[in-house]
Image (cartoon, rainbow, N blue to C red):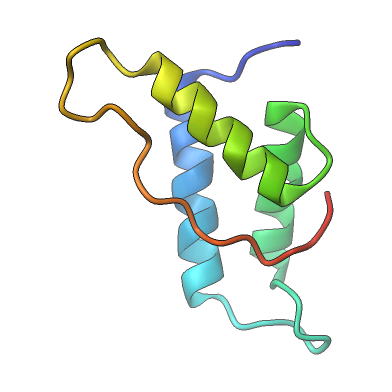
Length: 86
């Protein structure tokens, strides 16, 4: 599997968090279009089929890419997924 660059992955997670925090839900109560697009991109980037799995994989990959002994040993908080499958 191709591994996403940590900076790209971090940016995707940050954008997803921002979209889920600020974007209104769609008419059916699901995530808005930007959040859905980011869910899909996170799933493709992490080789998963569910946004929860994508965020967990992103968390693991970002933690593994953190420099040894750095204060930032993890990727920081990740948004709770809206629950849509990728």
